[in-house]
Structure formats: structure tokens, C-alpha cells
Amino acid sequence: MQTKKSGNAFTNNPVVRAIGLQRIVVVLAVILEAVLFSILSPKFRQYATVVSILDYSYYISFMAIGVTFCLISGGNDLSVGTGMICYALAGGFLVQQMGWPVWAGMLVTILMGLCFGTLNGVMVAIMNLPPFIATLCTMLITRGFGSIITGGMAVSWPSRKGVGGWFRSLFKIIGTGESIPKGTIIPVGFAIVLACIIIMTIVLNKTRVGRYIIAIGSNKEAARLSGVNVVKYQMMAYIISGFFAGLAGIAYSATFSSSVAPGTGAGLELDAIGGAIIGGTSMTGGQGSIIGTLLGVFVMSLLKTGLPYVGLQANWQQIITGIVLIVAIYIDVLKNRKTAH
Image 1 (tube, helix red, strand yellow):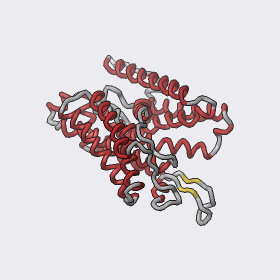
Image 2 (tube, helix red, strand yellow):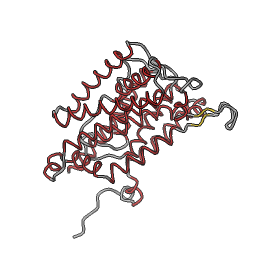
Image 3 (tube, rainbow, N blue to C red):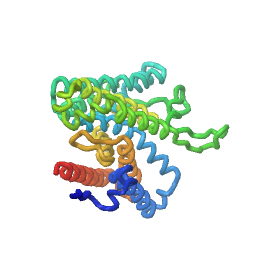
Image 4 (cartoon, rainbow, N blue to C red):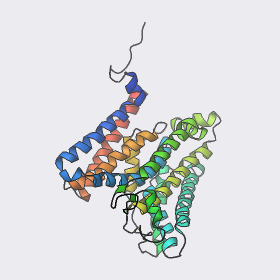
């Protein structure tokens, strides 16, 4: 007796199965957003808008890459938003107030991310605290710690024309009229994001670290019985998240000329978590895609950039973003329910 295939002709198509139905849906959502905003606002159809979308996508992408590993492991990381600001404040303070070179400030930003990522890993993997509670505590700690470091004062990293301003060109080159026409903006940071996406896709799918993190998220006890060092690899997920939160702090400081203000960052983690979930990472663990996360990030970046063009300010942006997250989480619930049956 022949077993009947589930799905339909479209979902069973080899190309669709290879790419993934959810990725196709997310790509279509990105296209629909871009078309809708372009119709509603002629000003949206500018090259400057593309640059603005990419500016937002850099720091959200870095946070989202790290959060993806935590989600796949069956956990979460609520501290990436306030952590990103805290690490950027610490690095910027050393550069601005202590006279450290920019490269040293950038290194400290990443090292702080690694330290707090390790702290999260210890609390979740060794102390067995629920990831939600552990990272919520770290969110509060980093929010306060950033203010203590700077004495409650905002911090500005070097301007593009100032000493050490070269670090801004890592993400955005602005022509001066010599080799590049004056005023021309080249968003080179996207190349860095793509490189990280490729590397972490390989790490997730082709290395022991990635495979074990997926195994832990799928069934923690089964992974333990199979000989996986659950504590070690669960910690690795949070260390990776901390590292990318540090990178996000550098990207945030480099792409936005305004100063980094202490006590901020709460809520930014939702952009990262939302991007990961929209991109197909399961809230229950064991399933996710770094490429899918990048696509989900663009959904969030387009919302952040496009909604002001149609006259919807901060409060409406939060409402619409919340609705998008509800839909994405509900799709994940339906998918898991279907898999269980």
C-alpha cells in the first residue's frame, strides 16, 4: 500500500522543499513591504532609504545571529539589546574619556559581550536557571552597568572626520571626491554581515558545536544520554550570542552619528528575536536557519524604516511590530503542532 504524501503539489516541489516554504514566504513578505511603502510614500523610493534600511539591519543582524543559537538550543537571550548599548558605552567611554585607540575600544566592546555571554551561559547551563529569568537579570545588570561606567552621561565615538573615525568606514563609506564621487554612500557593512551569515551557517550546520546545539534544543536529555556535553555546548550558545552582541555594539556606534545613551536598549532584543522567529527559528528549540534569520531581520528593518515614511511614529511602530511577532510565533506553534501529529 502506497503512503500518501502530506502537503500539496507546491509544498512538495523539490525547489520549494530545498529553499524552504517559510523562507519563500518571508522573501515575499519583504517584497510586499517594499512595494507597499513605495506606493504609499514616494520618498521611500530613494537610495538613501536603502542605506537607512541597511544601517538598521547591521546591528539587528548581529544580535539576531547570536539569539538564533540560543533559541535553537531551547533557550533565549533577552539581554542582547541592553547589552549591546552597555558594551558600546564601555568601549566609547575608554576611547572618548580615557584616550584609548579606537581599535582597543572595539576590542573591549567585544570582550564585554563575551563576558556577559559567559555569565548567561553559566546561569543557564550550570546553575540551571530558566533562560528567560537568567537573561532578564542580565538585561537589568547591563542596563545599570552602562550608566555606572559613564556616570550616567551619553558617549560619542569619534566622528567620521575625527581621529579614529576610520571605524565608521567599516560599515559605510562616504565619498570625498577623490576616488569616489563626493557624497556617494557605499554600505560596505552588508559585506561584513554576509560574511558572518556564511560563517555561522557553516558553524551551525557543519560543525560539532552547531550539531550539538541543535541536538540539545531538540531533546536535551536524549543529547545527554548520547554523550553530548550539554553544559559545554549550551554555554557555547550564550557565548556566541554575547560575542555578536558586542559586534552589534560596534555596528550601532559606527552607523549612527548620535551619541550612545545609557539606560537604553530595552526592546531592541525583540527586533533580534523577532527576526529569528520570522526567519523560521523555533521558539521550542532544535530548529533554525541563519539565512532565514537574515531574511527575518529585513522584515523588521523595513518596518522600522518604512513606517515613519507613511506617518506612523514610535507607538504605532511598536504595535505593528508586536502584531507581526504574534503572527510569527503563532505560525511556529502551528508548525510544531503539525510536526507533533
